[in-house]
Length: 534
Ligand code: SIN
Image (cartoon, rainbow, N blue to C red; front, side, top):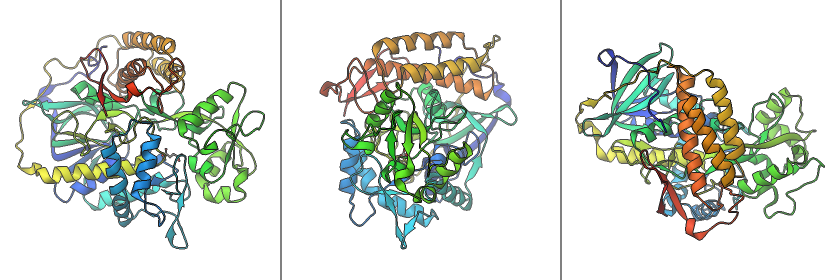
């Protein structure tokens, strides 16, 4: 795999160099919460690819799971998370998530996040595989937007520096081999800059855009994960992707998320004959996501599948205003007409390997949120655990960095790569075709149902695309380089795991196998996937 030879031409001597104590990459829930918590002690800068609001957090609908209601407990949240994780959860991480979650959510509320209430009490809804109503929501189905709003407002009050339109190309190391900052493309000026820091926190989110159908916004091309891999970080469990069962599926519409909370409140799935095909499956519409997504996939062979909000009665419009408004734009009134839906790539359970305080395998590099993996989600994330995970492990990083007192660390000399970085003379002919092909291959062969024949074909086709690809110094092409890098990593992990578990389903190995109860690990330069026991 040629995974480094796409960088931009540069002039080392005229490089603008910026300094900050803590550099946060990404402005979703994990990045912002880390920044806010560290800002009292350190000089903190956030770099974000587009604008501060844009990312997966803003698009989250259903909510944030937390054991805060009278009849709930962290123990029960722990049990449900472990069960959904299909034998691959890191128990220590899940315990931290369930136990620290309530305090983190209270902090978020104190920062101004307003969750929906009934008679002045927080209102909890149910989602798949939760044994209780445990999911807080805001403005009905705009939970992510409300959380992001509150965090952005707090960030502004904390005088944290924010640089938007900053595309992170690669990590920089100091002469001791430690992570010392990043090389950034300032997209409005097309100039390169170095940002140096005593600690770098990666919170760049996921990689949904590797798939033709995804609920994720355009920015989610896995750039941070790919850059960490190039720098030598370990990637864990990259075969585990969660496909959300219900995204809007209309010609010309985006794969707009139709929240699982809709099924939690009573919406039903219907096949092309308008029959409830989940009726006889344990858990029915609220069976684990992988089960529901596969059932829909099978039904779609016979025709379109629908989500029927009619079962909710007139409250559909009030409870899910964003879904109502979006579907209405496409000519569907959800209170009277079932919506055509299909599954879509939604969440990466794997990512840059971290421990429970967010340390990666590279010194001075920390990670949290969707780009990171400490096994808290196992092989299948429990619905609405991701916003909570972002808060809890951001908080863990901030505690760790406060204890370390990095102010006293010396600024070491930076080791700028010697053989940079010229974009090759030969540009690829049409990279938008390559992107389209990659997303098709991933959807068809590395998607909801996989087998060795399809995965091998995908590997060959993606390798061929890699050979054809020679990027321009533009953001779209740099993204595509990362997408190609990560798609090959994901295929390798999916081929290697000869069993089915959680989000990874192999038609040729349909059973879960005790022998595979371990995490996959991939590292640049290592030919084979390694495994570590849980
Ligand atoms: C949803 O609202 O269905 C998404 C929630 C999640 O993925 O956690």
